[in-house]
Image 1 (cartoon, rainbow, N blue to C red):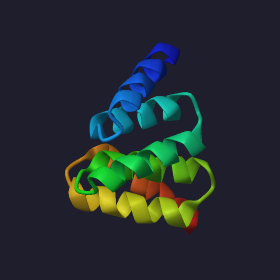
Image 2: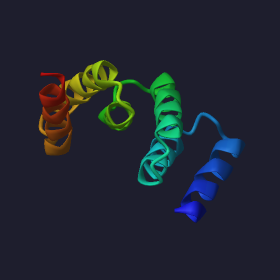
Image 3: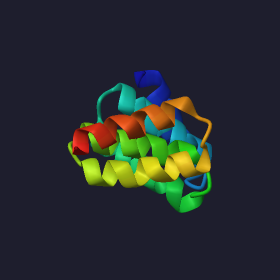
Length: 101
């Protein structure tokens, strides 16, 4: 994971407009349990392209694991709206809804 993080960081140093690098680096941060960094990178990806579900999903999951359930639900609702057939998005959103009840 350290190597992947370093490679994505290198790409972003060269081209901060590289959407896919932000998305992928946020996923690496999630695997490393660095929720704040995952939220930050997902937010950067969303600033570049908010029409894809991945950064909404990753940021929503990171918010949930950080205890920010309302923000998690907002992001996961958006992820499901963009990818209604993605089972992982739907599952994560259901878990957040259960936690809010």
